[in-house]
Length: 200
Ligand SMILES: Cc1cc2nc3c(=O)[nH]c(=O)nc-3n(C[C@H](O)[C@H](O)[C@H](O)COP(=O)(O)O)c2cc1C
Image 1 (cartoon, rainbow, N blue to C red):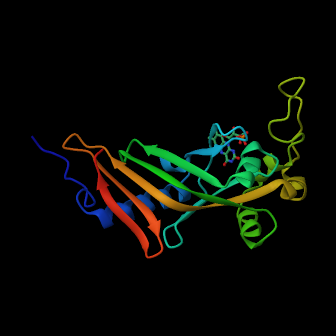
Image 2: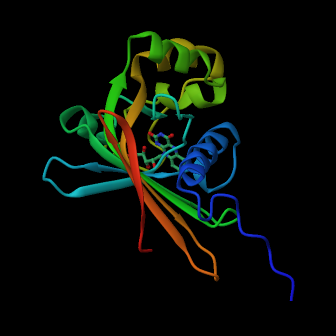
Image 3: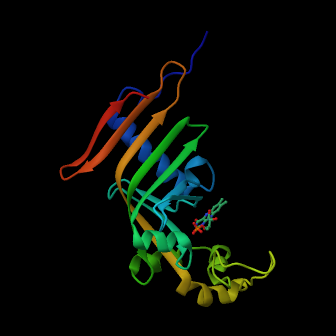
């Protein structure tokens, strides 16, 4: 019986860490795959968890940060503004890898990070930020909101746009394989990332 060779990171902790960041960066760059659409958890004002899907826009292994975008009028923006602790989780079925990241978020609305993110956004994506009323507002009917057209969205959407950087403080990696799963976790310390294998 032929067997798929084990991946190079299977018993190599450093390679597993590099693979986690490679998968995240690939997920951000490509518009498909599990790592393109992680779930983002925040802490609600009542202390209860809040969860939703976001598009991963960037993952930078050097700084250990992830970026996504949101409307500054949204609940998640308010929640992160009040309590920056957050977590992201994603699973890619082709890679058979789950990645969980815990960290702290900063909202960027008026600085170079926000400008670069807005400049890099497509007209189609900008339209959502010009929606009135803002996300989460109760409506008298499902369609009782307005979107700007793509040409005016550049002006109307920008004030509502936020780029969010998550500085990862902990990363948990799980690879599924019938020959034995592999799980590892790293936490960020003053000297850098410190990781160890974990029982899956
Ligand atoms: C495929 C998909 C991608 C999404 N991407 C984003 C995103 O990048 N940013 C965002 O704020 N909301 C995104 N959403 C919407 C959120 O999941 C959520 O419904 C909305 O932002 C309201 O969340 P909140 O009330 O917790 O702020 C996405 C939803 C789906 C289904």
